[in-house]
Image (cartoon, rainbow, N blue to C red; front, side, top):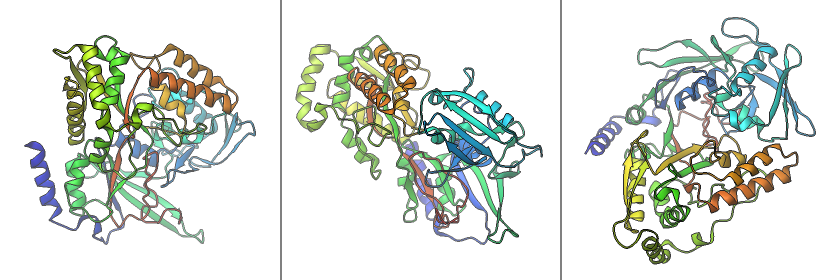
Length: 488
């Protein structure tokens, strides 16, 4: 009933205006991120929320940053060089100032970066930077990052909002916060751009706010917002329930993990045979079809196609057979493992939202065929499985596998961990790829994770926004929103 009431309100709001297709006289872009109020949170102290990440990426850039297409462009560093052996990255810091007017120096930047990847840091990206050996200021404006082994994806990691270069007074742009909070909690962001002749300046202005999904869709539908960021599978049905302008709903072709990780070593989740059975009986194609996301496909391996330095993973043999042809054998296997009588109850930790309702219903249907009952539990409650919904921060296969090492999960493989450690130190790319591939085989064979598909990330984009593009990292700059990507 609550979901139907929300949908009714959204549909009514959609009829009040033409939403994303209405032009306005004012030049400022109105952008909202689904979630909490954006803050300039220190990533070394606490992992930033999605709205924090949007703000950080736009007011506290890293050495490099992402453009609209997810490609690397200069940030605080105006240029950089990579050594032939891939072990040294040298960045030249642009001449700029902190918000308090003091000069930005390489020594300050090195100290901030070292703090971000220190053992005590809460930065969620730090584990992916394990190959960093030293961060050394060479001059007042030159900094070197030295690696223990080559990492072609280093710049992708340094461009993540979690690697923002900031001090208590703030960051170095590209936007500056011109007004702390508007009447509705929004932030006024501005940046100055030199014109072609280098004499006059132009200004870009963005009002950045946060809202829950229903409010964000309603404000977009009534023309109060130009861009909504931060949508996931959880709230996608809400966006689909409203008649939006053509092409307003856009998806990022992200890579990452979407599936279930076992939470306890005892009970059904602790048995690899049971985990394999549960994985085999999920009708992934049905769930993917329900999501209706272009390009989304079912997946039965931790790794996915298109990752750096490794071939596309091979799906297990059982995945080739249609689900209808497998069910009879799977039901017999369930009776063998649990007996023909009362089957166990499985508790799955899922967030609230209509998308999670779809996932729960699919699991209840599929696992119910085996005689199993499925119950949703909230975060912090005892669970057999937990949903993982994470976008990969780089194209490295190591990130996928390190999510399931023994220091991160309750059920793991020490042999796979040893391979990951060896891969981190491997000096040759082919050797590293072979070690990671073998670790992936071990993890898939042990069913340390039940993959379902890739994550879902969506945005609402008005036709006033010309500079938006979907990308594999779901990171969206607020610069150049009125310009076609690549036209700057």
